[in-house]
Image 1 (cartoon, rainbow, N blue to C red):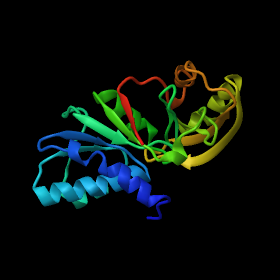
Image 2: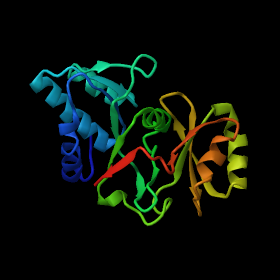
Image 3: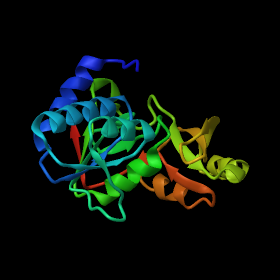
Image 4: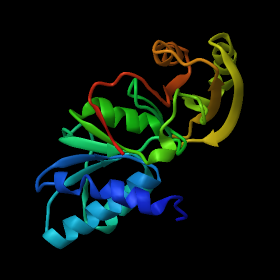
Length: 211
């Protein structure tokens, strides 16, 4: 896997290793930073003989956990002790995030709302003055609703909408540009029939940024 800015991401991953304790259930995020963190946690588990359960948000991260003998759990039978993840953009002032370039925002958001604390690992390239400065907002959509959802997004102020392909859940994904992202936008997007989830993570009070 080609990983940009790998050294910085490895340093971020090292910052959460001490939080890994025997018997914990941990939410594993997606993306390259989470991939590095998952590898390092796997090595720690193997070297120290720890028993932890992972709630992974993508098949790639699930494969990493399996590689190191980490048990895979689910949110029906397990409660998360803490979680970690990356982000595509972070507005530090408001603690707002855009996530989902890897098309896993549904499971990522589910982990975050199910965890008492989620550590967001981001290097300096992900810090922005305002959301949407560099990234579009990924939106997961039921395939037959793509046209309808696109029309509704335009009414919410979307200035550019691009179809990217399918998520791991076999839903469509739209990358959407908004000129102005306000706190109510996350809820407005989610209320559109056919939207499964968006990559907007606005005002979650259980998030801690590690950079």
